[in-house]
Image (cartoon, rainbow over all chains, first blue to last red; front, side, top):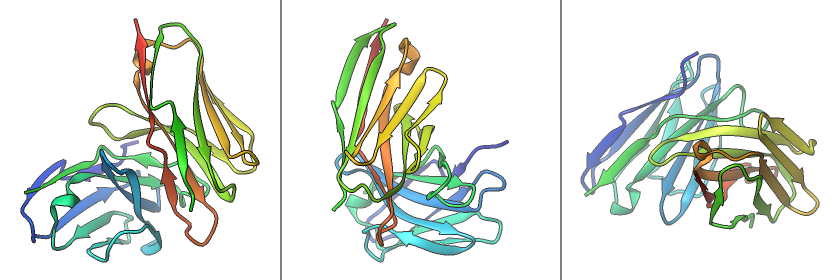
Length: 114
Length: 113
């Protein structure tokens, strides 16, 4: 069974631009979560989607948004990029939500904002 | 505010030794606790998931325990190998209205051949 895939793997953007990252979960998984990882803050939870609905969200500004499609694939969008948004963005999928099921992570998208 | 702490931040041990990694959390109202490993520049690999009603989980040379009342979890690695070198992270899923996952900063483990 294929693992979680994320595209693109690397991305360079300039301040003020917007970016969209994509995540394809493991086949059969209905939940996708997004995380931001930086050297200073570590791993921080962004939001979780289940059956196309945002289930919960972390403490990030409204510039960070996401959505999930009927095939469980998910996208995350960051608008008006800031230098501090440079990070590794990880997505994870689980069978039916992270409250009860293991999360499986993708390799991440490395975003650099210049 | 829930905090997840992992001590030590880094650890070096000779190959073959048994070792314990620690994770502590301040709020016992959790759905579960999960241990991961992360290799440099890579994503996370799930190791063990312990539900709040469970006390421990085992997989091969790994054993994780959970004591909600004291806010602690340990990851025991038996007969360590150089391939175990990685950063180990624990994460708790909060049960309160926040309903989110909090990660520790990790323990960077180096197994000396």
